[in-house]
Length: 561
Image (cartoon, rainbow, N blue to C red):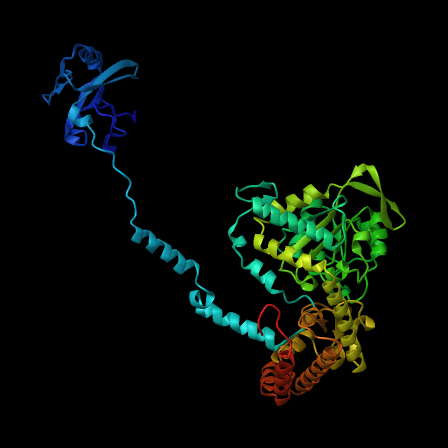
């Protein structure tokens, strides 16, 4: 039998006495004067426990039967005495421990060691040395790479439709102290304390999001925590779908996004019975027919979700058809045309469900209520994400404030004019555009008549400091070697470019296409030879120099260049 109890005449017990096996009906007794010595431990038979108890009251002496040292239990005048009563193995015990006055007399209490002023100053200095270093001192290697990226942005032409530039205020918020705070949960229901000001920031951001798109807070709610629009879309799927439920959307060649699932003809919607029907996408240059999507969704009983990531700026300024008039849930990125930080946002209907009149949602029906809010918020956190990025939410609040200004509406109108000017310039140069033009901020250039793939053209443009992105277009066999590129105007419009500037860019784009097509015909069978020809091409070097000279005329937002 193992016992964790060691009985002694002092309250402190050394670790060596723990778990001592009692195999001879004995118990350990330790002398008070040598509590820390293993040699002072003596065995006492349990049959003597009662007599020991009696001797404690009579003030006698205890003698070890093995001839060991005696333990005096007499109480001398002036000595302190502790009395302990307890039971061991069914026996009632009482022990008294004598402590001479010398042992209980204590001197002045020890004061905590107070650091000297020099020590405190040294600590403060070390914190400042670590915490206040600029990137150039803290990490010169990274600083050098960041400098190269800034130079690339300044000297290049940015024509990727999903990219843009942010202002200094947005960058300041992204790099602020708000990144220090952890705030899992929703405003007013956080898992951590100290979030009163974080709650204020997120609530302000939500209000500005509704205001920017002209939405009534009684009928619409918003979640600004998603890390991206793909995260926002999956939060909707997670919150609304059960195992076995289906979604239906457009594939990439038809203008959809890769997070939307697979395309199926509308005639099969009734057979397929999707729980969520998705409209909107990443590569469609025309207006969306939301009314038709609403009609199909009503027929098959689906929730209508719009991904307006590409056109959210146009929606906010009413420069395109408004998906909020038709859809149950609307998601978006927060960068691209909104010129905010990289992230996602979810708008969802709440309150009474409306009756369906024709293809528009109108008067409410009090008997049914939307139940999106709790499901979507729980899907964002804790189902898919951890704590929100508070610095991002603050930066988004700044961008959304700008979206609601007249200056931003002027900007988005210029984005559309520039897009149409670029499309017309390419059409005049006999380029083939998907759908023959554009109604928004982007266009799709079909490169197959030139014998080029989107991947090849993208790489050659990059060598000339022009950035576009390959895209699968309708009729492609797949997205591995897409036959087109997507070109957008928001970024260069943010740098101050107008219609005439995009005429110049159209000339650059066509010259690069002709150079690439010529070199590919000469060296196309050998990728290595084709690459070497590109690197040594004087025509390509000339275009690159002209592109740099053109791009550096325009300021880079957020920097003094």
